[in-house]
Image (cartoon, rainbow, N blue to C red; front, top):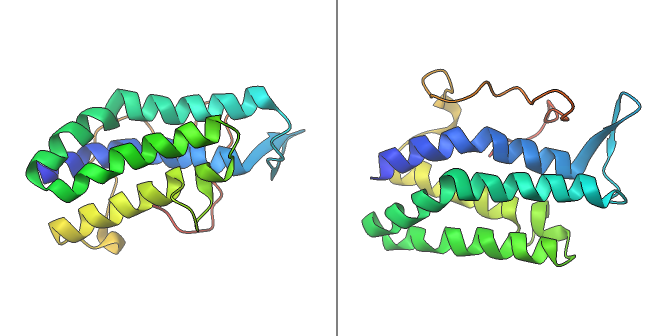
Length: 150
């Protein structure tokens, strides 16, 4: 169960990280700039992308995983709460590291899966994972090249 959940998580990871990156930066006049959150439609699209990731793949993952190990039961509600708070205007609940933000909880879930399976982040490879090309669709801002990956 945990191995299957980890594989499903990995297929969701790039879209989730892409949405988190788009929350922080966006393209304006061909340049990546900090998202100042003055475009509600842009921010809503990013939040919808995170909602879609939960609905399309993570919700089933969060139903099965706690059956194997109860401690995994906390992640689904924490992610949902972070999205609810972001939609209510608390924008920090998308990516701020010192809060139980969506990105922080997603990172913790990733670390928990790795530790449970005895895997090393440094040896993870996307080569063996099914799923779409990790490149963002046209019009979307790619994740910045530097920085830690969840």
